[in-house]
Picture 1 (cartoon, helix red, strand yellow):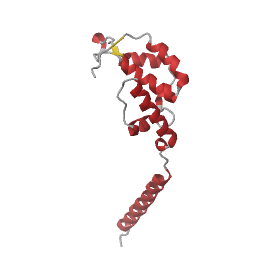
Picture 2 (cartoon, helix red, strand yellow):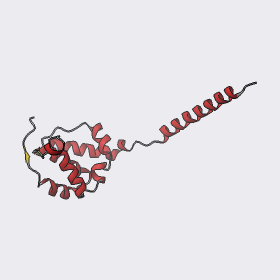
Picture 3 (spheres, rainbow, N blue to C red):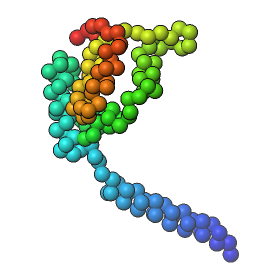
Picture 4 (spheres, one colour):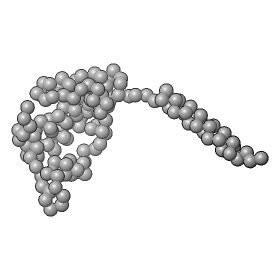
Length: 143
């Protein structure tokens, strides 16, 4: 009598049930850090700062999802030369190699990041402001 088929079937059922239990446990234990009162308070501060600056703020949920209660990557990444070079590369015309050249950026875009740093990690703001002072800006975004 060949029982290898039923043995495999039993193994698959056991593995499937164990996997389902692990998924349920993981969902129950996972903490959503972006939903805290601190994250909500900082999101409100950022929204107010955007409005005072005359910028259109993202929704509170978007801000909480992106920055959480600690500023996310905006506050975690060291603003060293490599990051500055990468940012400069992003502020280009999109061409590759020979045709690539820097572009003039609207100051509102840079101001938005400054507002984020001011709310979430104000100690990083002077370093960012020193960097953006070197960039050529203009009023380019129509409201």
